[in-house]
Figure 1 (cartoon, rainbow, N blue to C red):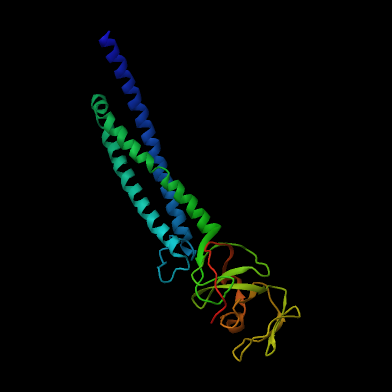
Figure 2 (cartoon, one colour):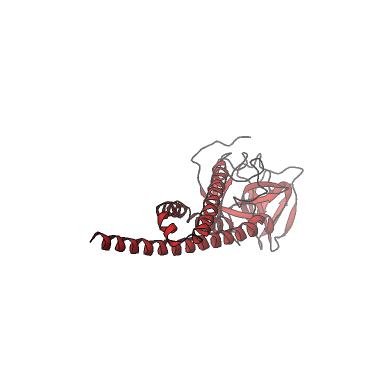
Length: 269
């Protein structure tokens, strides 16, 4: 009776071992396949200035808040750990395939433990792909620097921006101008009649701002396709289209859809 039980137990272990080897192979192929896809996305998205894994980003030049930078560093660490774990697991699987069946059964418990450890990290490349797709093609973090948008936004406010193909009046936009990232309010778009002279800024005949100076760029035209006129809400200190003119659509990086920070501030210089 005892001998029959041992035989049955051995058969169960053999079956478990085969299933575990098959699951391990699928897990290894799946992990590295997903990682290759994420690597391709990583390379493709290097041109996105708000991509949290952009190799050209630094803490000083990044337009994103600190929380985004901390997340990217932490996630890179997790990726490295996952790669090391799966590389070691793949090596164990390769060496295990060379063992005899008896040797495999003897080390089954240890190999099962390695599989369970690797399985914990199996979701890392999938999660990485999801994060990169969302961050690279749809939404990203940004940070307000300066007082030009007070009281709507305070300096160091964290916001979420959405990449869009078209903009509407009063959109709060993120733009790049003279190698600087700026947050401004869009006040005129293609097709609008823009008049800027010594008396103020007029859009479609309506006076939007009377505060202009000798350095104000003057216009009297219908805004052409692909260009926009922006102003800061804190007009007394804002560096905006009054000073650098129309903004090209290629320099518009997205529009603000959510303010994360819960701060308040008064208009100040």
